[in-house]
Length: 257
Image 1 (tube, rainbow, N blue to C red):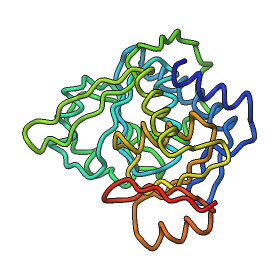
Image 2 (cartoon, helix red, strand yellow):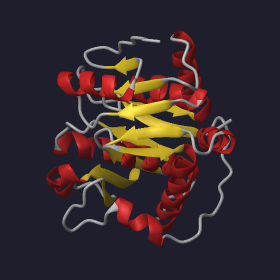
Image 3 (tube, rainbow, N blue to C red):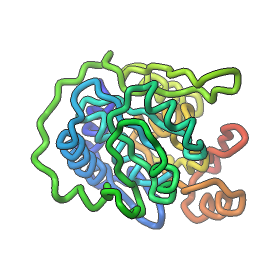
């Protein structure tokens, strides 16, 4: 099974089940599936073909999730980028990965405008002046052209922090990403009735692959906080009845059921 197939399986079995909650809005598995297919069509229209890299630099937002699934459904490879990096580091990752498209949160437009790597640029979440806006483009795309995706096709190009040298891209296939999610789900016994509060950045390897994908594997619900703050995390955990909390400085799970 590849990652888009996992999403489609959840949408088929529990279409109205809450997949994601963020910024006061809920998204069912069916909604995420439909939006990700529109995103895939958008990316195909922007020249993304099977094996092409597309980078996402964003906080924890629905746009990240929709773009993530959309890139993969188009046959592309996701390059998650730390949203706190500056222009030189971003340029290096974009050029080293060979990214053809750069999606960035609108709040990061100042950095995106300075990026010199030869990539197409699209803003996520909030609009950014002089850049096309991802969410606004989703309803004006051409029909999606299905792409054959194998379990061992490349899914992610995840970069290390670069503390001991240049960041290094770590390659993950659809199979290894899903298995990382299975590992996370089994480790803390997640099931479809669970909610996970994600306060750590989703672009990081463990939040994305162990925990977000773990919730996808069991068909549970991920509650996203745009950026970590102790008060916000505690408040949202109580408000959303999320028994699992993923927080800094290390992933911590706590269960209350």
